Length: 342
Image 1 (spheres, rainbow, N blue to C red):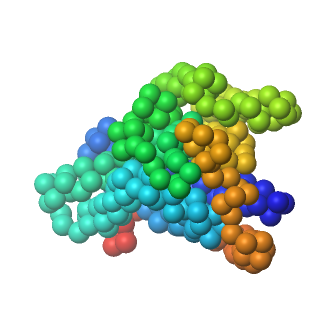
Image 2 (cartoon, rainbow, N blue to C red):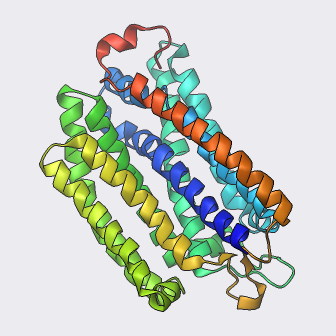
């Protein structure tokens, strides 16, 4: 049971790392039509994440791979019950990747405008739909004893699911605007900082609403009430959210971005801790829920995977730390002259 518990929280951690890293990419892509006043602004925005966005998506592959290998039954039920939502996310991610690569291949305003729309859709849709998907997991899905999903895509678009989607979207918008505040200068920098300040208030209201709604729509608080010490993580999450605003006021943008990163990770773990040991709860009957114990691979598989993770995850983190450090400087108009620039 110890291995299943370890893998349950590793599963949550990998999803949290994906949301933390690729979250600012989603935010920048969604903000592109609003903060990019001209083509140079848009190119600077795209190049601020250019060397990093594809590396950030490694965590999505890792999280999906862990779901498949450690909890194969969950993987199969997830991709059958959430098939439509997950396919929409996949197509949006493909669209965004193609758009980023093709946008600057032709120096034509109409051509670039088409791909700008694709970047917006390919960023906005995953940001919203990931939140909708995870909020529905938090509240439980209509899954029967055979793992069959009794619902449609529109079943997922309920009030709590949409609130979760809005929460994720606002988290990523703040995260992205903070990254732009770090990586840009001049008027674009000022607009990005102003945007982060304004959206933070909407994020605060939505986060409070989501915490309250979770009390009535989910069983997430059961684990917290049973183990009051776990409320520490909620308190830390609140402090991290308030820390974003504190550092924004002080114009300490990197610290604000770090606080935003911590907020995203802790928001994810708010649900992960509350779900334990359920990975895919059923709202038809708790007996039909898929848990870390009834849906996991064999102990030998989990042991081998744990060894692989211990070896290779630090390598991935080290590489990403190197990449972030390599491209830590601000993006300027001069950088747009390079052939490799977006």
